[in-house]
Image (cartoon, rainbow, N blue to C red):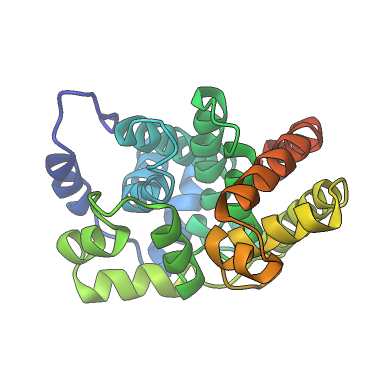
Length: 259
């Protein structure tokens, strides 16, 4: 199908190629999905190609977790291909609503396999703990974990998609499906269980620093002022807490809940 990216390729060139494939209208998507379910390879390919830009947008959210962006995009494309093979149009959902679970699964699996950072399990779960489909919360979290010298999701979308395309993509992704609601419920339970393993001060530091449970993320310095201790002391408490959280979260295998 020719949708994989290799290290020597230019990301901008790839994005220009992706833009050639327009987003399907609902009626078109239904027709292609029905034909794909009957074994029509061309129809299945059209479902995939018309949603490549969404795989890029998902990969960009996780570009600072130690895995090359091009690798994440390729993994997202693999999730897109998997989704096209399993999509059931009779359930009434749009293809991208279903596909985003598979795209995210493949992207996060790649990060999970590549990453050796002790902070990763919590950050990974935090991203899934909150509403993350092109909403304001997602953009705030993106800023929190991104380095300033990287191209932001907003900038890239502005450059590569016109306003109509961006609005259309946003409108079709902002509402949770029943399946996604169940996913988020399970993820919250995992995180809550891990938090309960902590001492009260450790739990408070994690919740406040990472902005869990609807709170605004705050700096270690701000937390230190509240408890009248140094920022370094808060850092030590957080490190201990993350170590405690890593095992129960890994044992429960967060990835199982987004398949």
